[in-house]
Length: 178
Image (cartoon, rainbow, N blue to C red; front, side, top):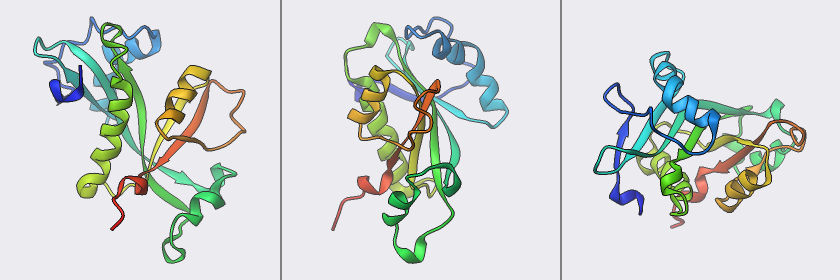
């Protein structure tokens, strides 16, 4: 299975999410009970990938964010990637709030495909003028490795003992060099 075989839609009241199960109670609760409320409160937008039977195969939610210099000891390394004239105290970003793949469809590389989709989505036609994709990844080796395999980098070591780790991807890497 691949994303091209699925219908991409923005969450609406017509979508049936109550049977979605990715094996993670927090993510299941979000898509079943909270995603619509977050969307109505303009806090995030959730997008679905559905099969031909309108079954939710995977989802992700995104919101606007920014990467601020006071937050991370790696700020100088990040800023050096931006030309001197364009350096700022903060950079526009998109935050992946949640991402989940139904347990029925795991093992098809859909999680990585979704991350690539998001990266490409925000660089093609530059939808919002954001430079970075951010994620607060669950702090367990499997999740951290998943994001690192998808070219995300840890922002700090200060959160090493916390429930989530801040990670980023620089979207300029998606732009073909001419």
